[in-house]
Image 1 (tube, rainbow, N blue to C red):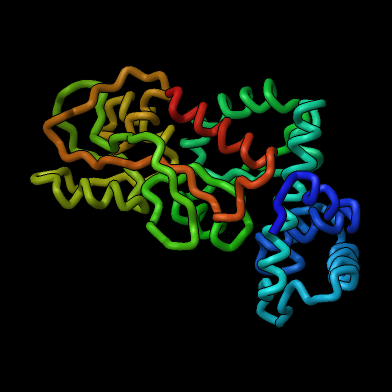
Image 2 (cartoon, rainbow, N blue to C red):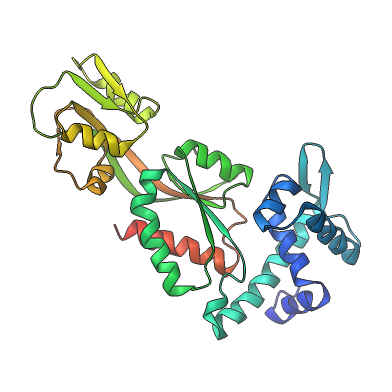
Length: 290
């Protein structure tokens, strides 16, 4: 089968480009409603667009049920052709006019709020320089929740800490961090300040022999750093969170630690068009440049 750029562009000339773009974005979602929200169009408009494309092709692209949508075998075949065709067109635009890299595409990036502080600003600065028309949406939650939302198609790409290895996601290991015990001074305290919802914290507490019984739990890593700085107790936080706080805290190496893996996580179909490739490149530039 001929997969030359000229043939790809012929596909775009035969069908409406917007219908093809809508189809590609919908293929990453589990429901029409979800896809319409991501595309920022009404559900009826998206349904009409998909039906028009199916009519033009003479085939059904999606199985539709109460539980959601799923690509048919014909849909999977056409998805590959559509992605190559759209990529061919956008690469042509990219070579002649860099301000059209995103071409209206909004990419949703997810990560923990603290992770965002050291990964997002540099990435956005990179996008601003390389693709002035960039459009992104940021979502913040615990890493495990971010990964779940990526699997569901609600988030395009995430900076995830210690992602679970699953076959339907691309996981690229980028860097490491160390969760440890920090304090204003290397002295004894009767209190531990931490986030008990994090398994890194639970791992450290289990290994910590003779640890203080009094525990203050908070979801805010920034608050943990500030309370440790005020000598209220030991703070259990990642090293990068301490660095971002700017506070003069000491890592107490006599206590247990947990090694975090910082990874980029996205679905296999993500990263096929210039806008998505640019976001991956920007996040890598930011994380690896730390």
